[in-house]
Image (cartoon, rainbow over all chains, first blue to last red; front, side, top):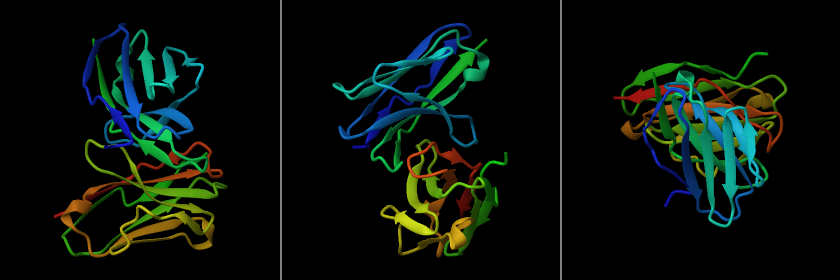
Length: 110
Length: 113
């Protein structure tokens, strides 16, 4: 079983709509969590960190549920430029070792 | 500020041949990581360096893979001999120190025929 699991999608979203998706992690000792964005044939880039209290960054909202060991990402007012693969990441130790999920593909359509 | 630089961007080789990838991290970043990303998967850590010391190489297949980071700056990842299953994107990342945000390079896309 992989440490971080995600629905691969694709999630087909009309422009302007809201889309949300989750990932689950198996290591209860994971300390920090992140969402990375990866465009096709590009490198991953940090989208946002995920805090226990939930956090927003513009149109993006991330939440962490430690009891159920899942992380969510919600994108409001989707833009065409939001089309990408979103990688869920758990940091398994304080020294920065990242465990990546396989990614959830989001396709925003006009 | 320049990002992480990797070369080559693409490499096609025949199986059993050797191959090497080079990474130049962001200036001042002490920590360097090598990841492998297979198609449809997330990156998987191969090795991470703190300056010139490898602090975690538990995921590096040591029978055919080797890495070095001389002088604690640039790093080279080598595969010898390459196998068909090594086809993947090899990503280098760096961070100021262990635990900080990691910045990824564009990767080297390896195809083994």
